Length: 167
View 1: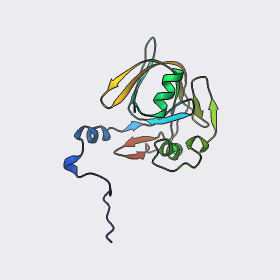
View 2: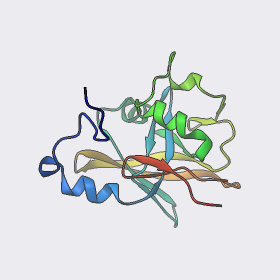
View 3: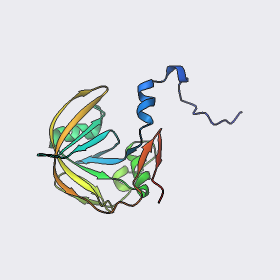
View 4: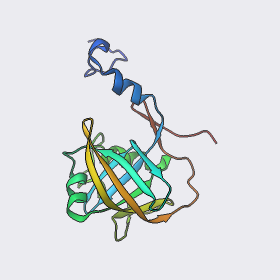
């Protein structure tokens, strides 16, 4: 048996999507979007200030989160810190979470969705509209409530790895 540093399930470079590889080089903050009992870490998002202020993000159309947002028209966006990387991995289904990822931490209930205890910056959103965008659903929502706190060590994602800013 040979041990090597290559990923055993990674397709050969010639078969990988250049667009996905390009997108992967963009360092993005990790936000946990939650609605009802569903959640998903989202890095493909932006916030536009204005009247109304908007959150725009890309989510998998087959995700439990998208189904929950369609039912409720509301969701919470929580900006995660370095200490939340295990939570992000559990919601991304890349780490085991016996009993489900909602059992990994305490939660604060809001009228928009659950927010992990200890998160200092989050927004409550209401679905405005959606459309297909590439292989995802582009969600546009109004920000109805925003709380901004001191976010030490923001959780970032780049090239398939979590990282944070140096202090």
